[in-house]
Image 1 (cartoon, helix red, strand yellow):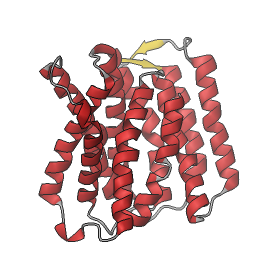
Image 2 (image 1 turned 30 degrees about the horizontal axis):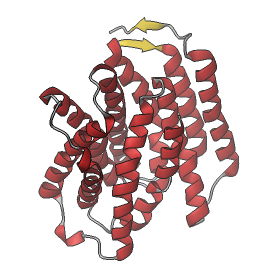
Image 3 (image 1 turned 180 degrees about the vertical axis):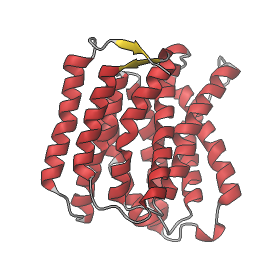
Length: 291
């Protein structure tokens, strides 16, 4: 749990930094590529071939390709159609994807209690971020949901791999980032616009921070933390980022915040975590999914 909380605080700045300084100014394909490249370089010293099977390498590359590579391709494009608050709003479905995907990977069983606690967290996030939607929100919604699904597949896939096909996590993440880098490289070569590279020191500095800090350290801390908690807690923690992101928007960029909604919604998310910890874990009965 401490790693998930620390990563949430780390990532709370990313939404606004991308929305204010990167989106529409720097080619999104290049931003994805450079961010993942820097993350891979951070873990390059831990890249190991000895003792790693081809199956292990490919599996960890696959989860990296989903959670970081494909997810970022959806995520950065969504900033062209949505405001930062709208993107935060549309991330509220992630806990549902986490619980459903984990149950699917764990043996095609649905734990109703886990799903209900995740739905409670989604409701809390919706209370915080419900607002007037822009005319282009349908396309933006699809892009963010694509990012959410990829993010859920990656974090749940990594958690399951550590349960059934473990390897040292530093080495695992070198393969994880290599898989993401393969996706980002192809996307940059195929769709990138060389005329929209960063032009200021601020833009380069933000990309450096996003690559080394938010991606390189952040995803390692998040996935490492995911292996230490149950799937329901992991699902709920995905929505704690919403109030954290709003507080950063207010504190640094002075964006308006509906404090009543923030307090009520944050309280609901916190309650969902307490409910899950006290009454769901150890008591939810798995039931077979029906067609």
